[in-house]
Length: 302
Image (cartoon, rainbow, N blue to C red):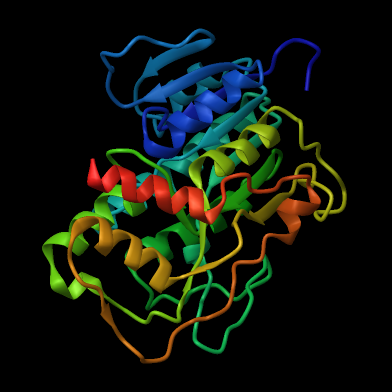
């Protein structure tokens, strides 16, 4: 990174993860170009420039990436149809990555997901070498897997694939604090879960901290992936707190909503998303499970 404050471009900058990444970057003194699809009415924080456009448009991408030191991609239209997920999550992300490389950007950090890993009752712990899902998995897992593969093929830039499990934290578009609890409240079928199954999670603030540290060079590149992102390579890294159980998550949600969970004693994955690589890079979660679940419950009651 240069002696001046690093300049980082963030796509999906008004989204659940993207907005927290912008905050974390600003807290580290970085200048931020925040890319959004449509203008927002709220004031722009100091050190953040808003740029409105399609990050998958090559000309627009080249414009916002000019002079940048790093870029962070957070956009994936989860819940959209397969075609939209492929168009935005894979094709647009690849176009943006190639534009970053051509602009001389040193590092691209991509928010992937631990959903790319195949997890069965007998799988156990999953590190970055874990088997990936097959084509029969859901649209989200498959398209995120294929986005990772597309980025792995874009050579000439250091790429980091950040793979979180369930991301806890407040927000209107937060899957696990807002959208999933709404489904649990409204549909009895969504209250069914194996209580002994693993609930792998990380808090959005801790996830954003690692992303910002990689993008600003606090976590420096290294030839050994266990010490840092491999220069000009494509390095996956799991970002997860110590695992909880499905019972802990569901009891928190149903208790706050005043409905009953339905326990299913069938087989379940009871392993863990192993984050040893992230920890060897100097990262560690600061938000405890008790804090995250208390925040979740308080938000639902409010």
